[in-house]
Length: 178
Image (cartoon, rainbow, N blue to C red):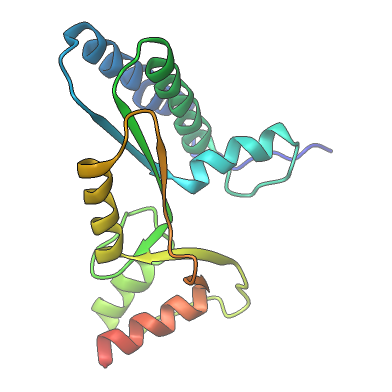
């Protein structure tokens, strides 16, 4: 049997939002022709998702969102290379801290900690991801905006911050309760 990725239930929404709207935006930028820099930020997960598909690797995180975001990244690269749009790309890690992306795995931890004063986590989770603290991520994004070179891609990563979900939850509890 072949691997069937999970579904979010509405691929047309993701195609319209992530591929068509990205294309329309970039076409408008191209026609305007006066932009000095466009910074596109995305997740490592987006970039790596399609590599897994290309190698027929089972990836439980592939869904309509990831596939269409990966396609939009290809559209962005095409506009950068073909139409010479001044695009800089930033690839980010999962962010944790006071605020984070709603898709970040630790959002549930933060909400639960804030609401209930404790965190429930699957203690069997040995998944390890590279998490970057929110202020470090913001500083990196500002640096990309201010100093990023057109045509280049940058990784927002803390090479020393590869943690399991359990480790991040413990750090959040320690930070919250001091």
